[in-house]
Length: 148
Image (tube, rainbow, N blue to C red; front, side):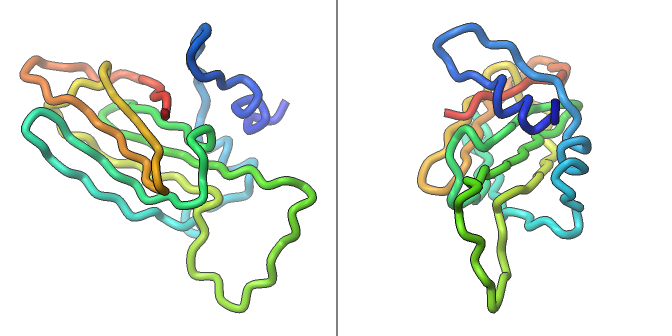
């Protein structure tokens, strides 16, 4: 089974049992023939507030189920795949300067955040991920993030 169909078919959003998937983004990129150089990089804001960090990633035209977000080894990794229907007609571009159909974005996270209580929401073309600040020492382990 192809990894992208496995991800699309097995992801479930609450309510219900949540079983996080473990996968390698490089496998997905290879399967979609997407090179890092050829992919559009979305613009990103990292905002420090009094009690949390807020990361905003501009990704127009997606829905919340298109995103795969996770923390691992001190990084926030966001991957998006917009699924197009087979009957959708492919446009003929005269100029093609942006494409957010499929992208990967990795952000180095500050050391003083708690990755266990992450909140992520996609609204109005912007993926917003909030990490609470903490004073205790935190190990940045693998954590999949559900986007609401």
